[in-house]
Length: 175
Image (cartoon, rainbow, N blue to C red; front, side, top):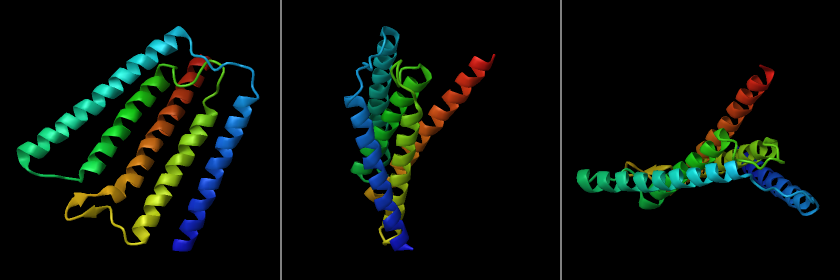
């Protein structure tokens, strides 16, 4: 079973590299500019601000919780990683629903494929670690071995948001 997961992990990494190389090749030979209009730039600015406030708020809440209760539910690296995933999700989801995730000339399909692939790679990497005996918790605390599962969930949330947005847009166009 471990060999199958290791082979799947390698295959997914190769697929990610191929997708990235194809994307880079296509963009380098494409004369179109992938600019955002003024509305998209403003929406992205608001999303950056909200992501920053989410990260700062999350870090403050966890620091206050740890200091007041004395209960540390994870190691610091994992706590910060969760906060980063939350803030990236806030930014991405806000950009998706305000039509500021991709430029006017791009289609979101490649982003859905990329985020799906990243979620799958993160999940198989974390699963491989669990099968090799590296647990996601130690002494009642979540440790750094759980970051693969956390990033897989973060990428999956982004994929779900992109799919929901496409469904909502297709319904709007149908009406």
